[in-house]
Length: 189
Image 1: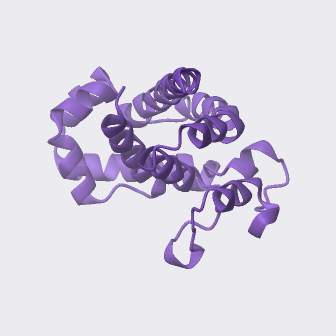
Image 2 (image 1 turned 90 degrees about the horizontal axis):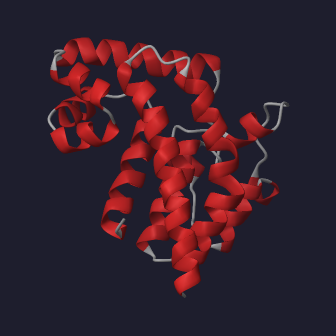
């Protein structure tokens, strides 16, 4: 796994989790056969054999049902039953961002939680870009792996479209493989 691939996948997954897919995202995804193949065979077949308007409606319903109405992809919501978001450096993720010079302006995003999965994936993209292997491994170990893997396993059963079923598996597989990659990178340093 090279850093260019890792950057691309983290950016893609961050976009997938950030909001309902817009028409441009769906058009670009439908025409990216290599990425569809990586995500999963069921998704590839479904997207290639459906028109864009059909995909738009189905994906928006599925995203809204899974990640807005039922449960939001927010670390503190998943790990703490109180469903409250800690603010500032009280939030362990914000403290981690701060320690690694990641400036997060919550006024610039519709996402209301600093530990939203989309933001955490964007942070990993930044760490990969900066080639901060130790930070990548620590963030995967302390934040992403403990909650995203069980969360996505649960969300897969709620998915009504092949895309969100496959993206659940893909995200788990990618994060686990990336963790192993980072462990190997730490040993070689």
